[in-house]
Amino acid sequence: PSRILLLTFTNRAAREMLERAGQLVPNLDGIHSGTFHHVCARFLRRYGSCLGYKLDFTILDEDDQKKLMGQCIKDHVKNAKEFPKKELLLKIVSDAANRERDLEREILSYQTKMALDPAPVLAVCRAYQAKKKELGAMDFDDLLVNGYRLLVENEQVRTFLQEHFLHVLVDEYQDTNTLQAKFTDLIAARHRNI
Image (cartoon, rainbow, N blue to C red; front, side, top):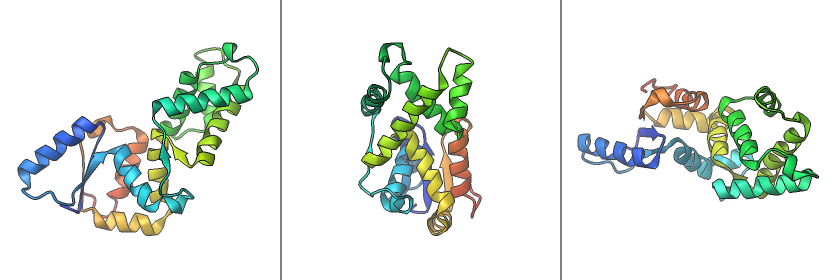
């Protein structure tokens, strides 16, 4: 069981997946399971120093993200009432992370949907990212991005995890985004048992 990795999207689905596995295998001691975010957080808590993070980094929830983005808007924008809402800016940052796109390119794709002045939006979004790094914090998207980066950039960690996990099971695999699929493919590259 300790050489099996179970991945899913929600905590509820993770519990259900573990229950189903428990019906097939009587002893699940040591099995690695959880959401993509949870598993990436576990890897980063163990090996995140390879990326320059302290192992006790903070994970920002939705409210924390809104507060931090609100502060970045306040620090960089004179008339915040006419500026895009923090929720929209957080969506842009999230979409860029999950699509593995440059922030500037993502902002330009939003500009075609609505009137955005890209320069100040980019400045605020970059300030948000810099502030997270300064605080030693990651949001949920950072967990995925940095979990994948950890595998790509650190050969020793990648090799250890690829060798360790004989089987990677993903609940509702067809729902993975590009980043999640690349993470799964990379971690399963040694044994090819997805």
